[in-house]
Image (cartoon, rainbow, N blue to C red; front, side, top):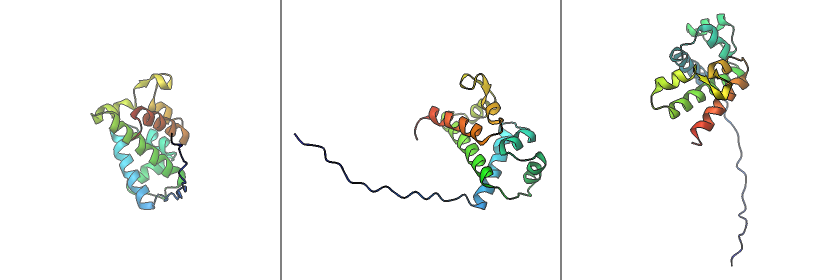
Length: 137
């Protein structure tokens, strides 16, 4: 009978690369397209991004300002939600519609209702739910 021997390991260093200004701008442009598919008003989109509506409209018109760390995190979560929906639903329109559909997990509120709570953690809650639904990828 052999005895299992521990294998020595060295933990890998984790050094996340910050999102660049160019990447943040690209995420914002992608989010604008996604917001059209989700049929969001400017008020709703601004709330998801925690921006004043006037600022959102100015950015939307092409006069993009500096996207801070919180904004980058919000955009990253929105892109993660979109990715998860594209994996879960074969038909993209079903994923777009899911955002506004009542969901038992959210006490019969829609994912959009949850995300419009205004906190970054509200976006994260929807993303974690979808990531769990789609399974580990």
